[in-house]
Amino acid sequence: QVQLVESGGGSVRTGGSLRLSCLASVEITRHSHCLGWFRQAPGKEREGVATIYTTWANTSYADSVKGRFTISRDNAKNTVYLQMNSLKPEDTAMYYCAASTRTAVRTLEAPDFDYWGQGTQVTVSS
Image (cartoon, rainbow, N blue to C red; front, side, top):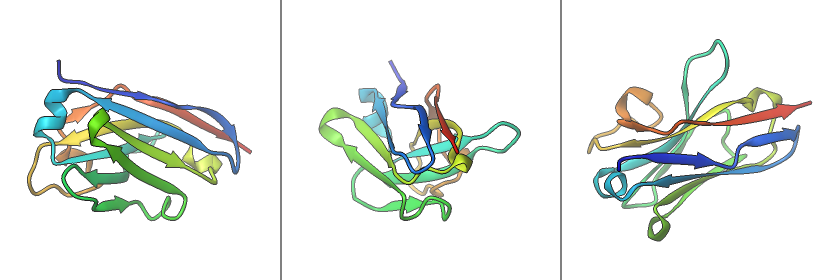
């Protein structure tokens, strides 16, 4: 079964932390070159947050989260993580895990990603 399952969302205060997890099915792990996290707030377009390649450690981050968020992966567990620190109200959104099978993927660009999870809600209150 081809799927991505996110977990770890919740509600925190400004300055708090959360860690999101995304469990990828074996099929996705086998065929994907890049995994990433995207988010979408009400009334806004989906935006790339962070991405990581599956076979080497290259990462990309949106400017808005640099220095606060860290993406990592555990290939043995088929899991990608997003550690979010110093959270702000503007980080409030539905967060989605995604996978790209493209060999030349534009990181942080949602159209380049083929598989998507159902999302996990992150709410940051002031």
